[in-house]
Each structure stands twice: as structure tokens, then as C-alpha cells.
Length: 247
Image (cartoon, rainbow, N blue to C red; front, top):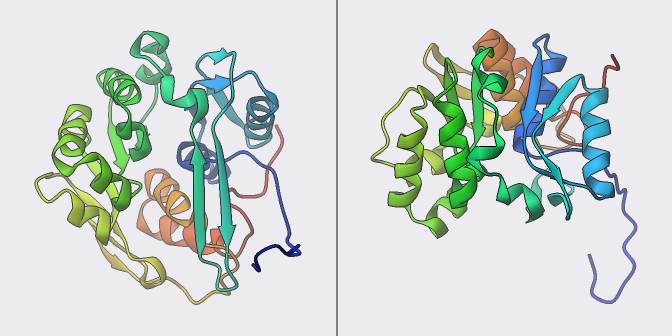
């Protein structure tokens, strides 16, 4: 983009965010999925609810006065993305606002690492995790872990009791003291799973946004082969979610 100039662009408004992306991909891959969050009563919050409904994802949690979380994601000509985030009321989710029944009947509670960056959300995630039969987590951002502090982030990871973590190589290196079973996302090289390393198939990359979320959903639904397939499919699409399948 050039300063003080009008740069032509293709702009889309859609639901998203790491947890929402994983839920949408899990639903597209054949699982029942729900999203637990706090959302605003503004137009953005309604857009997110309606879009997730189109992806057959149920949304649980309070809708309150205020602005919902907004992420501006830009991608360059090589398909690489950069994000600017305003978490809005989503960062204010409290343990008291979570009904244990929302997770007790699920196969797995998957937690976004972004939840661990704020004390309220971290406490809410830990509370939900205590009621879930299985817990997984995606570390989400090495940069944010560094800003928060590895020791505090690791303590919040430990409070989750997650038995599986998804991370890039940089994210894994950011928490060297945290020990669990790992899925390491290797980008264009594929991913390293407990079952072994799987190469990414050659595809035309359009947009890498959400590829790691698709991979996580695929692994939780069907293992490494489905994970690699979902991630490869994601990078051929614009945006972080699969095409919607209405109810």
C-alpha cells in the first residue's frame, strides 16, 4: 500500500477468531461443534452469531452491551497474513458465566491460547477445563507469550491440564518448561504429530489465515491425515473458515 493513496482491495466481513475457526472447521468435517464466548450486542456480535449458525456451530455464553471482538486480517501477494486485534467484551468472560453442562457432554474442550493472555479469560478457561472430559490447547502466538511472560503463560497452561497442545516451532520454544503431548505446525512443511511427521501436499496457496485452526480441527475430528487435508484445503480459500453448510 502507498501512503496517502487509495489502494484497491477485496474486503470481506465474516465471523472468525481462532476458537470460532476451529469450531467451524470441526463442523464442516462432520463433528458437532459449539463455541463458548462472551460477545457484544453490536452489529459485529450479531454478524458472528449468524455466520456461525450458517456453519452449524452453536454459540454459548452471554451477549452483553458493548463491542464484540474484531480482528483485521490482511494478506500479501504470497498469501501470508498479518492481524490487528480488538478483543472487545470477549476479554471479559468470567468463570461464573460458564455453565459446566456446556462442556461436560463434549468429547473435547479446545482452548485458544489467546484466552490465556488475560486473567479473566484464563480463569474462565481453567474453570471450563475442570468440567471437560478432555482438554486441548493451541498456543496461538509466540509474540504474545513473550509479551505476557513465559512463566505466567506456562502457569496458565498448567492450570488447564491440557493433554495435547498445538503450536508452531516458535510457540513451542516460547514455553520450554511446559510438558505435554505436542502437535507442531510446520507451515508449508506439514506438521509433526504424535503419530509421526506428515508432509503438506502441494497446493496453490491463496490465503494462509486459519490454516492452523483447520489443522487442529482436522486432528481432533479424524487424526493426522484429516488434519493435513483440512489445512491444505484452507490455504486454497480466502478467509479462515470453510464454505458454510446451512442447517
